[in-house]
Image (cartoon, rainbow, N blue to C red; front, side):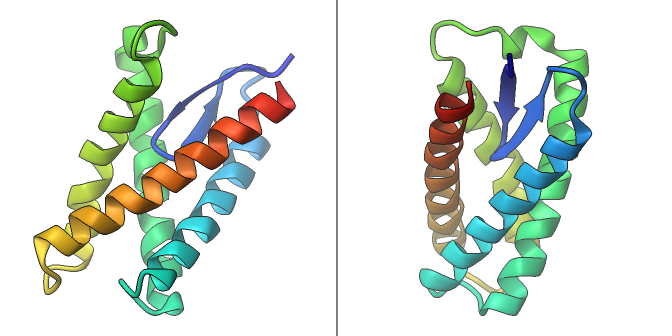
Length: 131
């Protein structure tokens, strides 16, 4: 049975240390987020792909580290997804802002919120479908 906890929009599998699934899902989320950043006219596709890859690689790495040192955050229960979603925003917003300092903070915040809401919804569907 596949069971996973997710942090950020990247999935951090806990079953069998499935690195292939982790990489595949991170790349899929990267593509979806890049397309969203382009669709909302935040960045052209080429820049969106690069920035989405950087954001997701860093947040996945931080998610793994946070999971190792604060496993209590990954216990399912009340507000489980909300905690992870907020942690995702806390991690990804500053990274996206640093990559786009010339953009208004409000535009970057909105872009970060949009891509993560959509990504989380898609990951929830994925987890429910394959679980």
